[in-house]
Length: 162
Image (cartoon, rainbow, N blue to C red; front, side, top):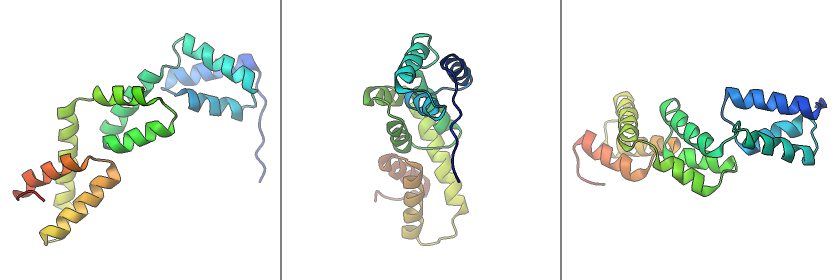
């Protein structure tokens, strides 16, 4: 099946991109990809993206912070998974780390503890080794840091370090 690219004028593309950016945070790469799908040439894409940045429709620092907060609060992701997602969005490393540092550590820890506690209640395993292994696999899939997971498991299972 062929994909048809609908050609959009530069003015319409700028207006449409501004509307999208005003409704949700977007990175430069995401807007560039949309503009390319709309059939805008490279020279005009650069102009439109720069105009959106100048008018504060696109702010990658704000995007990174919102991405972090949303993924932690709504998706219950860990920092490692979020950082990977932001790197794939093409954000500079300094913006990613800056956003990571602004996350409330206690809220983040409580979220991980709550998710692990839920998982422990759902497990049917009786062997402590299998319980820990299952929790670690779950934690890794969510992008939680192993040190935090280990600390929470020690607390919840009242056992020595492993």
